[in-house]
Length: 372
Length: 168
Ligand SMILES: Cc1cc2nc3c(=O)[nH]c(=O)nc-3n(C[C@H](O)[C@H](O)[C@H](O)COP(=O)(O)OP(=O)(O)OC[C@H]3O[C@@H](n4cnc5c(N)ncnc54)[C@H](O)[C@@H]3O)c2cc1C
Ligand code: SF4
Ligand code: SF4
Image 1 (tube, rainbow over the protein chains, first blue to last red):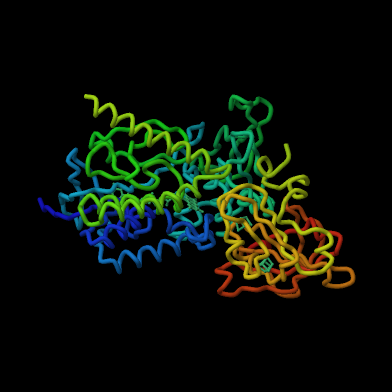
Image 2 (spheres, rainbow over the protein chains, first blue to last red; image 1 turned 180 degrees about the horizontal axis):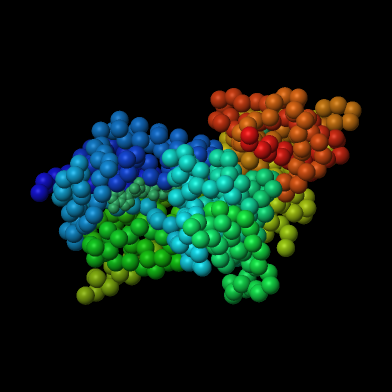
């Protein structure tokens, strides 16, 4: 078996992994980035819409353009990037098992940053295993990366930003969206995204759900119904829509499998998508030398993923003695100031509280350790 | 339930209280931005793109954008740069009977100048016929086209887009 050594290994070349690589490399660390995809950039490459956020987070720029620019910066930095490389395992000492160019390779890094992102939640209902029922993220990859229209007449389940944005992009790609159904009594995503959908004449049905997908070989129609306050369908409110595709945009959950293998400690925060790794303000987990950043620490957005990547990159380099303590502290302070701005307002407040809860769990864990 | 949170469309009250919507007096003077952004979201490209300081969000980027009508020249740069596609330019002085609405449009095919189209409101319902006056697609708009459409004056506060032509 081949063994490869490096200063810092980064799992995942999405928004978080790429910024972590840039920061660590800038400090002079030897950096290796690993991603199972053929193309780096993670989620960013599917995002053809203009991003939100502040000007310093490149708001108004389309996601894929942000991805391209990050990638160029990584290439110029001299970090090594291994694509088509699956990280299949991780030991408690953080050594990584990877398949690279058909070869089983062990990577021994002084520090590891896990930035594996998140995966889509699924929802079961009669007919949900029929071809034509798919994740909204999968549909987005089909239209924006592979340029294949998954269906002609779509019912979207979920009105969070993912549901709203993917509905809009499906229409741009030439499909018809018959309706967005939302179980909650209100729209989850931003009003301005919802506004685009409504101007295109698409209804957003709050307090509604999909009760059944109908079809033999594939989806031929979809039954939806109104739900009561306990999310139970109300008999007699069923309608059948002649859809050929159901897209599920019912949330994401952090891709934490590798982290579980190391024995690092988790805390449960539903608003972040479930079990999330405890970490401190340096993004270091309960396993020394193991850092996390981006959606894997709790589902947020690209702007915050990039900032967390910076935090992890700076901190990992600092712990290798490559950045003086005072300077690292100052730079983290700047990043945290920007993160606090992102985690504010009606939509961001909850994420700020969740992040605080996550950091507190880590503090409690560390205090416990000091006592024993 | 009404309101953007329940329907995706700002209610009458939300629009009346929205600091981005120009007042009647400013509307009378001609081209002006109408910023229909009524939720506190972390976003401010409208502020940074305007060279005239006519839209301000402030330090706290979740604050609602405020239009300073007297500073707005109606140049239109903010229309294509708002990721929420929430800004239009209204011109009540286009002609004796007609006004124009400049709106962002990201679907193909694009309409052409002179086309007769169906003008729609915030809910996508057809309100009146519209005539395409101008289609602008420049690199500064980064892929978003801005369409200028003439409509009868009385519909200037309700028309916000056009019906998407069916693809052939
Ligand atoms: C429809 C949609 C719209 C969005 N719109 C916006 C927006 O307007 N503004 C905004 O800020 N954010 C937006 N986001 C969110 C944003 O895309 C994500 O929050 C961000 O990309 C997360 O970055 P990340 O680096 O944590 O993860 P990702 O981008 O998911 O990257 C993770 C990478 O890790 C790789 N990986 C995972 N496991 C392994 C393994 N075992 N081995 C090798 N590689 C692995 C994956 O292949 C992937 O490339 C949107 C998301 C979606 C789905
Ligand atoms: S139309 Fe021009 S001047 Fe008016 S707010 Fe927009 S960018 Fe500023
Ligand atoms: S750019 Fe658009 S969506 Fe963002 S704050 Fe300004 S008006 Fe609202």
